[in-house]
Every structure is written in C-alpha cells, then in structure tokens.
Length: 231
Image (cartoon, rainbow, N blue to C red; front, side):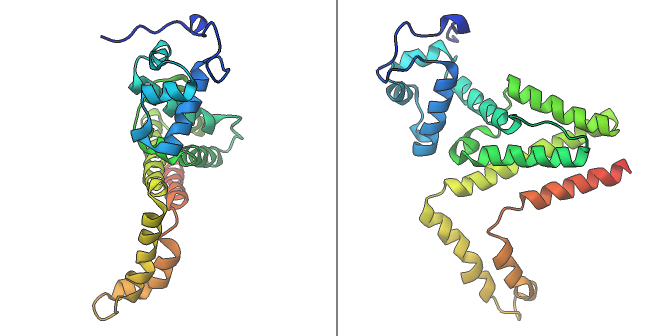
C-alpha cells in the first residue's frame, strides 16, 4: 500500500534536525543529490538519507511516497535547473539549441543522478513546463502538430540519451575512464593500413575526436534536418 503523503503545509518538523535544519522537500532532494554524487546510486537509501539529514528514515516518507518518488523528484530538479532563468529569444533553432545544451549540462553536472534519472518520465512541474516550452517553440516556428511532436520526441530523447551515455563515462572510476580514453591512441592509432585502411586513414582524427562528447554535433544535425523540413 502506498504511504500517505502529508500535505506541504503540514510537512515541516516541529523542531530542527540534529544539524539544526528544518526539513523541506527541497532540502531532501538536494541532500539526495549530494549523496548520489559522493556514493552513487547504491549509496542512496532512506536510512542513509535520514542519517545525512539528522532525522529518522521514516521522515523521508512524510515527503515522498517512496524512494522511487524521490528519484522522480531528483529528475525534475535537474530539469528545473536546466530551465532556470531561460527565456526564448525568438529564433526557434537557437532557442532549441540553448535548451538542449542546458538540459544536457544540467544532467552532466550530476553524473550519478543522471544515470539514475534521465530515463524517467516524471509528470512533475518542471518537466511539464519544459515540454510545453519545447512544443511551443516548434509550433510557433510553423511546424505542423505531428511534425512538432516528432521533432520534440527526437530532441528530448537525444538530449537525455547523450546525458546518460556521457554521465556513465564520468561516473566511472578515474582509472577506468583514463584506460578507456587511452584505447584510441594505444590501439586504433596503431592499426595497419593493410588490414584496416579506413581506421588507419582517419586515426589522428579519431584520437582527437572520440574522447569528446558528440552531443553538440548530433544536436546541430537534428536541428539542421528540422530546419530543412520547415523550409
């Protein structure tokens, strides 16, 4: 049975926690983000969160129906960070490009949280506001509704997919990440043209390119395709 969620007005503790803080929805989300950054998804539990907050673990359930509800709140917090202070400038392509980069970088700033949350659909206010803004940009640019939805779908999935991919790399232990990066120089750059002519011909470019994210390139390709369709 789902746990009863106390209305916002009734959620505040009557006294501060051991750290001298009064618990709020926002404080719990921010603390959970810090725990994910320091310990990864395996280190996030109601018990550990309660300890970090200086409160009993059951206190978390006064704010969230469960840990999955908290994960959704974290995802919405990251979208909110991306949307903060953003205002459309009136150029649909530039506006979408800025939003895509904002979403990508908001998730990448919290790699462990990104891996845990970027695949989730929350239905929470920040996510809904972001979807409304993106669809509004596309419809305002002149795209038919069906095309607007199709481009929105590709746009948001691409942004979040790259966030997960690149965040997973950042979440690796440093030694493992550096070992992966070295493969392009240690292996690909040394393959002979006799057996691998295409790799050998492009090896210097592969070494220079492949350890960087391709998100900005993929985003520009998507927007160029949409622009050509609109014309």
